[in-house]
Amino acid sequence: MRFYEVGSGSISIGGIKTTDMTRECVHSLFGMVLQDTWLFNGTVRDNLIFGKKDVSDEDMIKACKAVGIHHYIMSLPNGYDTKLSDDSNMSVGQRQLMTIARAMINNAPLLILDEATSSVDTRTEQMVQDAMNKLTQGRTSFTIAHRLSTIRDADIILVMKDGDIVETGNHRELMEMNGIYAELWNSQFTEGGQI
Image (cartoon, rainbow, N blue to C red; front, side, top):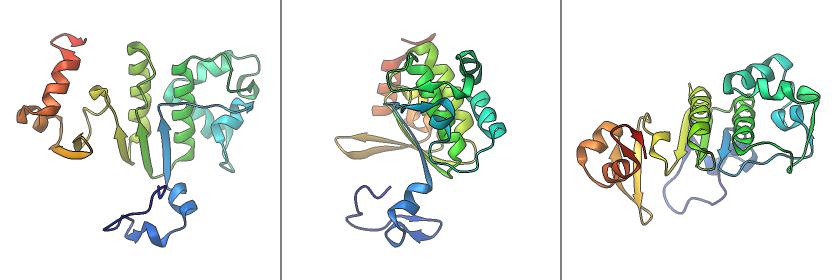
């Protein structure tokens, strides 16, 4: 995202070094879903299309249906035209689903999902995880998570300890290594599911 410049080596997107792109260009290539959700003063629609021009109602509603927030929005006094603020009476899960719908509407080719399920309860986590699975289809996604259920289906998992990558592989490979990842997995899950 170029919040920090590369100290050595280079990062390229589509064969172009990020240092040869403007920060705005790099930022436009990414959608982000963070653990801390935010809404601003404006309508539901304003919060969903956030800065994106030419978003049709059909595309907006399709994204909201895909992540499972459309029914809730339609229950609000004015649906998509309901005014919101940061202190709106929405659950953390509903806010997170709004954020995922926003990223889906943004339609960026790259995604950063940073602890996107950490603030929700186990029941809501499954809804958010289903929405994130739809969001990540056809995109390169970077998922940062302590809840390992969030990353189980990732193509490549990098396990970090004290700032260093200590294990690399997919879920099956890392479980077979019986190292840090397997230890973390086993501490989070039992035979019947999550502890």
